[in-house]
Image (cartoon, rainbow, N blue to C red; front, side):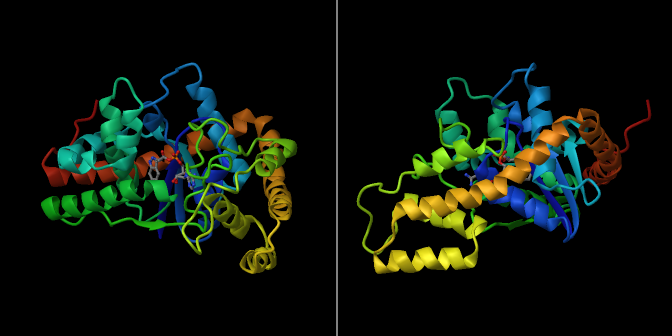
Length: 328
Ligand code: TYM
């Protein structure tokens, strides 16, 4: 089985990325051939600071390795190290009706917040589909917010195969138990770096993690009868990922009986989050001392993957009639 996923280098990785996707990246290393990428081309749609991009890319690699990606078991590379993906993006973009891209909720949300909307933001799902299809991936571990983009990749695979002959598998998603981690300080919004104060970073010290959980919003006003408030539901989601089934059952029983004390729930959750995040932070600090090792991992991966990327491109060029590229 071929597994593919990617993350943008927006700085340190947050708990939403970890619980929503990266935990599965780590787990799936034992299930098949895993290819993971730091999507720096994608990040140009937003942050275009050339001075911080190399550092943000390096930090993402540190985080991912610290979370448990093992270079012996997976291939972790930087997206722009395999420029073939941009050629595939062009070819697929010529098979992409604009109407399909116009429906993307992430595009609608992000473009609404931008003064000038760049074309890259609009064609972003095509680049993402190309990432996946370039390596003929079959399974893609992501959080819920990427499902719509993944559906685009499936449509592109089907369409290309119909036009030019069987070439790409249709990639399936793989979700964790926490498909959409909400902001602790505003559980009506997704935990995200772009929502101020909403994210627990994997690099945060214990006291900061505890402060976040302590301040977590539990009451968001009236909820329909029998429905948990979003803040409490979010804490139960995190508990289901980071705590034992006994702990989850214990608090669920209390919730049902109407005796749940939020202070106790928060205490248990923050202890379990600290227990999960502290070792990652420590490994991250160790890896930060070995920048040459981290860079070598990325470069080796790109060398290896470029062979596959070139082979897919050669096949696509042949099938579409673009033909062979003459040697320089
Ligand atoms: P990105 O960088 O926004 O997020 C990386 C992963 O984290 C998940 N995620 C969340 N999951 C649960 N709750 C949250 N609050 C939360 N926030 C983020 C995302 O769903 C994602 O899985 N376009 C992608 C990167 C990408 C990609 C790809 C992914 C580029 N090429 C090919 C898969 C396959 C993105 O911006 O993810």
